[in-house]
Length: 428
Ligand code: GLA
Image (cartoon, rainbow, N blue to C red; front, top):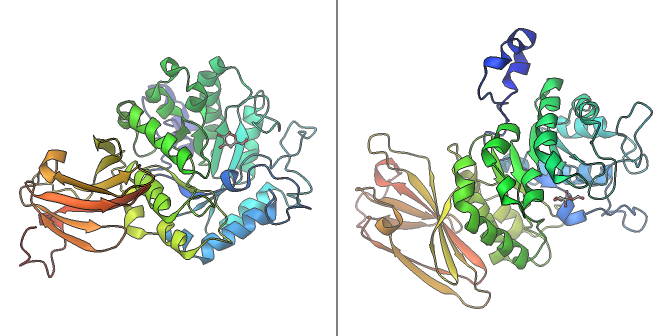
């Protein structure tokens, strides 16, 4: 989204807008982090039968309270996102969206305030088509009015879905909403589902164009809380990595969909696997789970500082699959700190075992993967928090990965690493 900085300075600069080539709204410089309702609560609207699991304002308030009180906000999860099914079936007499009067009696501005009062940001859901995916009023024909409502309600982030619209309209409508948001003058992170609806029309997906209008975008199927779903997303991203990587970076992120960690069906190993790969990709970390009811082991996985630091690395690079066998994928992500003198990067290394039954022992020579810093690397295990040792490019690194699990390491060039207590350590 590269056309908004001008809005901050107003009319005089707008006069020169035609000269601008690639302006930027300055938002989402690191991948967004937060909590979204969809994959945990879907479109449950029966608050009589399901008082604690229906889409209403209490749900978002209670999840927000947990985010603040249980350490998620401190770990970086700042956004609380309403998803589909928050609206009334009809717009008001002025054509404006209205929240469901029974389930959101205080309205969206009050819900935004609830978040802002607690240091959180507030995200909302709409759809570019005539209706949302669940059949509520869509923004088609109302883009400016809706953008203005979101700004009036102090919304910080919009997820704009793409159900119920002709595919040929995608390249028209998504940029139009970007302009409408910019015109409000409120900084609003813009998440587009545009390429997700063109999954069978890859010829129509130009990420360079999409990145000019959107801060992040969905491009594959909805996730659900299963290993099969996580794996299908990973396989798709592996397959598409050469197309994805060049357009991924600060302000413009591919979104592989929500983290399902903490939900029934996802084991501890699977949770580490999803977190590892999502962080290696610099993917948005948007949880969808029930934070009122989550085991500490999953909370700790979601809040692992060293792992989150990989995701939030300021270079914002999307890591890539660099070695692959039937069972195992090795992923590498260049990150900070970088040695200015030699140009050597630090790396996050993720090793995924896709096999559901067998542990796998994995070994590789560092230099073969491109870890060639002459002075070697300090390698830390990010899940255990343990130092593994110091390795030269010609050394072999070996690790054992659980079924449906992943191990994750950081390799820091020795010249940049904290070597306190390691001065006399010999190479492995
Ligand atoms: C689509 C999106 C989901 C969710 C639903 C809501 O399927 O991809 O993330 O927002 O719509 O209806």
